[in-house]
Length: 286
Ligand code: ATP
Ligand code: ZN
Image 1 (cartoon, rainbow, N blue to C red):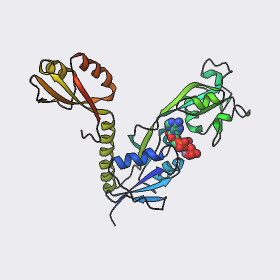
Image 2: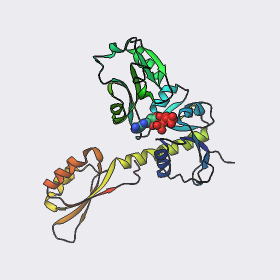
Image 3: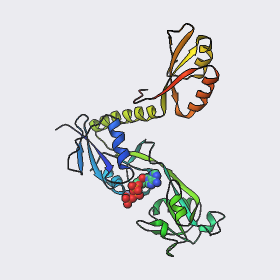
């Protein structure tokens, strides 16, 4: 049988859907059979294993899977012998310390000797010890946000994205311990064949993510404005310019980064651009 790259993906939870979506945008199609433990790609040498995300670093270290997709927070917490090979730009969140709203808080020193409930004891311990603070870390496996209310701890450290869960539990965020996003981890000792498949996959992931951050831009402009417009359009090399049927006008095509997007649109309009169209890019090979 041919070598396959075994990819561990969360079996249910916040990472699952986007992990699968990313792989399918990379051109991996899966047999979506009834067997939810495993799916085989029929057009790329890969097989997906659906596992609990917290177990994935261990499985990758043990070479039950070759690579896996997990939150950076889980990668950091588990401290397994795996490499972070690619950031994936989704599931962005942060791990923060929070205290009850009414608590006076003026800095990390206030946490000395206090009980902190968390599902991430290793990350919190390392963070505090680097700051020279010694607290009493209570590892619990879920519903961390209720710990202060039931008298289990004076503070918590948990995942925050918008902060609404903290608020509804009467807590306020006081320290950011780490920022996190989904990452791809890999066993450091892949054989050559698997390493080659992984390199191919990472190349595709980069193309997908670059495309997501860029838009294809088309516009019409009077020929007198082309020079000024070209100067503000980055393009992959330089914009494509084709004459319009109407005398004295041209159509310009270019690629624009999401970050500069609105700035550039405003400038284009003031330079006389018309009929501006913005189109998503599916893949961008750089
Ligand atoms: P369990 O495994 O017990 O179901 P979990 O917290 O490990 O719980 P999820 O809630 O599915 O599993 O979260 C998986 C990962 O998604 C987290 O490790 C984190 O990296 C990221 N994450 C969690 N909450 C959010 C959020 N609100 N916004 C964005 N990313 C998040
Ligand atoms: Zn989990």
